[in-house]
Image (cartoon, rainbow, N blue to C red; front, side, top):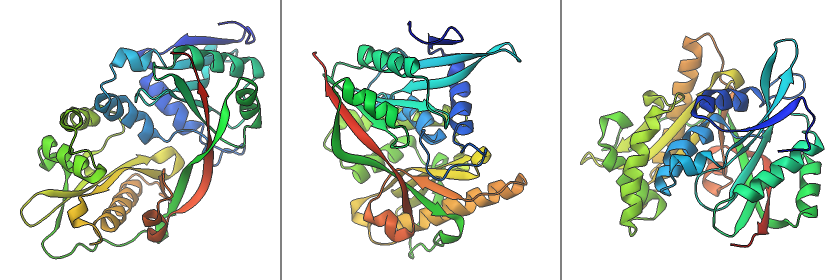
Length: 323
């Protein structure tokens, strides 16, 4: 690809980049002074792990299809004589034309942004269009999107924060108990996910979900002690929550969270959030670290009632492309 300065280059994704991208996402979540931001503009590490396994499996996106829609831009670092990551184009593997521009806190050079938009439009899937999430702190990206024919939608993607001191306590009703997900057959976990997210009438997705959750523990940031389920008196999984700990940023992320509709309004999800926070606090303390809180990508009333507060919203832009 042309246009960027000679000290900046594009290259495709290789599997050896997985941890490198993970580290970039974690390390780039900083303000200019180096402190973790409370208004993130990039993915959290959970989304990178979840996309590469669960999302792709659920939507039957092959690894090759997912990888070919990932783009890396690197900048030559003379003191170390190495190429360092400067920016990324990521996708969620859901065959919906979604794309995400990731960077440090400073805006990318205009020629790099133009190359990113070229890459996105050339490598989107066959859904017929592209959907971008753009952080409002990067107005140059929105200006380029508008000039290239993208339209800003009414929808925004929220990012909400729960401080460690605001986490609820574990308080399960009689007859319910907490277990770690590895203690339950992955097919039972997949069936719960289907009930919680309303796709039990799509058996192909239920089958894909079992494969998806079997793959999830293969990611380097997955921890079995942070993948939690609530069982009812019969031993059936009825609520689930996954937590992801990012030590470098002193925070965690919640993905996914779901409850069987027959067992809602009993405080199960609230209890899972409290237990997940407690476990991450304990994990941080054992390492001599500190946890400040956790993120979730939602502004649903439930989360706000628990104590999450919206910190940022990404605007959503769409452009129709010929099939």
